[in-house]
Amino acid sequence: MRNENKLTYNIILPAHNEEKHIRHALESIVNQTYLPNQIIVVNDNSTDGTSKIIEEFVQNHSYIQIINSGTKSTSHEPGSKIVEAFYKGFEKLNSDWDVIVKLDADVILPNHYFEEIISEFALNPTIGIAGGIATIFENGNWEYEKIGNKKQVRGPFKSYSKECFEKIGGLKKSIGWDTVDELLAEYYGFEIKVRPDLEVKLQKPTGTDYRNIHDVRTGQGFYKMDYGAWISLIAALKQSWNKKSIASFLALSKGYWNSVLNSDSKIVTKEEGQFIRKTRWDRILKRLKNRS
Image 1 (spheres, rainbow, N blue to C red):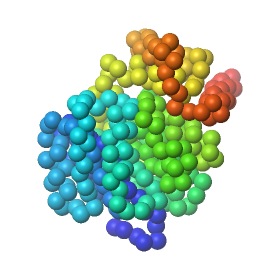
Image 2: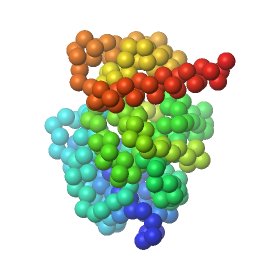
Image 3: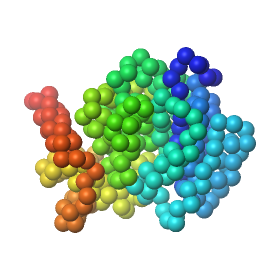
């Protein structure tokens, strides 16, 4: 269903070797109670049957388009590779939009998901980023994936207002893009809206395709977002505690300090970095105060 009185939205969905999951993802999108104007699926150099499944949906739904990214790498790593695939699709958008959505190819959305999310943007123009919460199948049930927090919209299902997307400079081609985007949105005066009642199913737990490098890259992201040493240490401790993994802490720390030694480029300005550190410290101190 499309409603001319509502905000319009477009979806970009990068996919690399997702033949086991992408059919469920696309079915959950085409069965939405409020449909997008355009869906661009970026086939990111898949070597399995992903492309064939996408083509089936292209044939049956005029608003779905497939783009073959043509990148040389056959991997689908976190960070820049995913964002580069996103922009391959973004360049091909042929209709105007009020909200842009980046989805992973393994999500399963409630059928009223975008009806609700687009309504949030329409009701409150200060909302810059909106989404539900992530669940994974564990212990025979769909349960909240604890690696995130319920005040953040997770990377697999990000929706941005046009104004916010443009203000923050779009998605950063770096690990940490799906954390720094919200911090920058707040820097520019936008709100983040999380709907805990909208549970998005992730058919694969986060990092399944790149477990060996995910924590190292995340540590690099701490540096690139200009967290500083102490906030990076706290973030590494928190993430490794949630995973119950000392190896995770060591990998996160390795990533951060490698970036320090290499003097890697930051993905924020000096002023944005100052705001990010202040915001993170305020939240850390608030949590400590609430626990005392």
